[in-house]
Length: 82
Image (cartoon, rainbow, N blue to C red; front, side):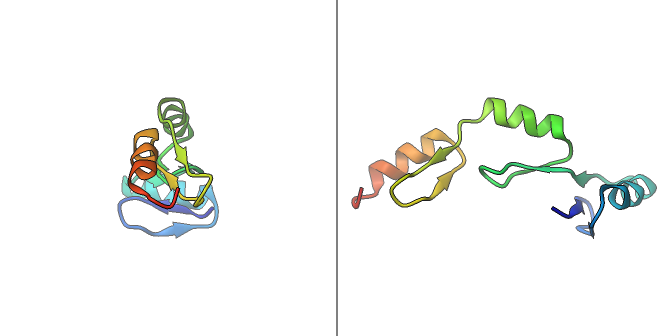
């Protein structure tokens, strides 16, 4: 995954390039992305906290994924083809 500056959206192929850019300008950059919901985080610790506190939902019938279990349950109630 390319690294991306949150403040100016510039992308970098290496974490070192992103670090240099962001450190020089006082910006933050994306280091980690949740493989379940696509949410992006500025560090691995924030991603770990997200993964441990978030229940992701995945519909095995239509293969859609949802950010949390409640949205999956709502999808199952609202979808008549299941």
